Length: 324
Image (cartoon, rainbow, N blue to C red; front, side, top):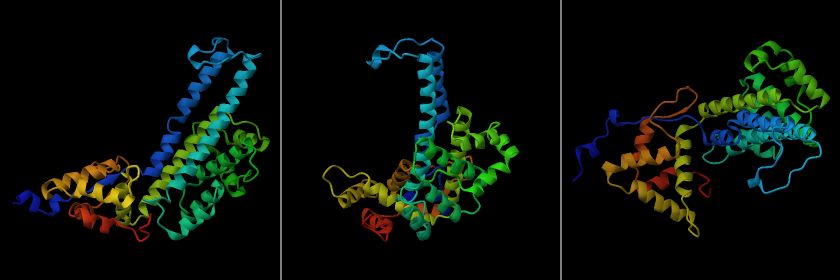
């Protein structure tokens, strides 16, 4: 016999859920989070080598280290670390844009998806596609990231995209005071001079370039959230999550059936909480994000999902391109 609680489906029962950060942005932050702190840590160690504080390799490294000139080695290593930091920062932006087109996709626009797909390996082309799609993007972080990509390519001796677009260089030239205020006193004249001279980026410059990448990805995330068909996105989240539980040698459709039974096969009274736990595993929360940039899942959609059965939820969530 069903309880009154199980039968009750009033508006008060509806639970609005929130997603503060997308999976692509989480992947970006996983690659680039605390980067400046980690770079400083490495530079502190190199400073110890340069000043003669560190003279022997730790035993647990199990390797030989006997530089002819420790000071020179430390300086060259410092350049390597900063160059690698640029590479990591550019790759992190690329990871965000690549993940944004994968289900559950943040990029639902067929035209935008096509542009990102046709860009291939060119992060320049992907950024230009994002710039065309979202004309309201903050021009300063966007210009700095374009400069970062070109600087990375120059330091890595890449053959393509070695020059930042002139329109973005002009944004930097005309925004010196604002950039200095927003990016910890970054000197645009020195930045552009170093870029033109193809010299290695300094730590302060690398830190500002990474900071700009964080700003740009956060803004892209908010814009993509605001343009979502929320119901389609929620269905994609459920569809992908059901398939993610696939065991070795198990067909993905069997995994979806098994997982759906474990959540939606419960008694109606327990199913509501089971669905909320399932969504919590995908990053959804009952608590609104501190910033307004997150995604809100209306209560009626959450309720609709809670009322599904193991069979109906697979039909409900199945995308048009159901082979994915």
